[in-house]
Image (cartoon, rainbow, N blue to C red; front, top):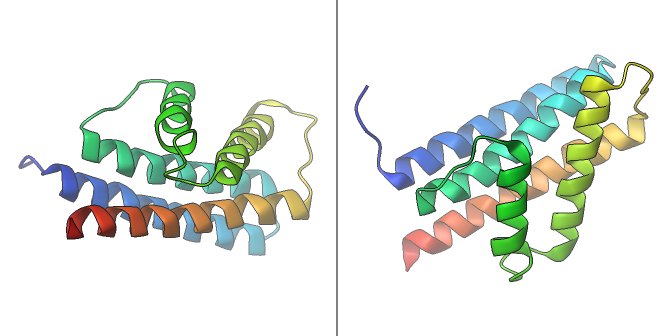
Length: 134
């Protein structure tokens, strides 16, 4: 496999985020809420990692990716603070969906999870386009 540039790698991750979001929507329509929450979270995670690709930085643990993004992009208001809070909630919903056998997600929580993914993808896409035009 040939080595990708940071921009190519970022676009690859953003495309992966979009695919995961589409999968989440399909799972939601099938009333598979646990799986939909999981895929929506991974959509968010890949969108964030698209930004990190531009810095040529990555982490092994999810919590480190989220903490870095919040510290360097949300706290500095490159991305809205409200989005930072929604990402943290998305992480909790994903963990509950994946690991808490008694957790039963509501349809509303899943809709919010998917909406967060869609909104973040749009913001990341704009951010990457703005970087390219500079």
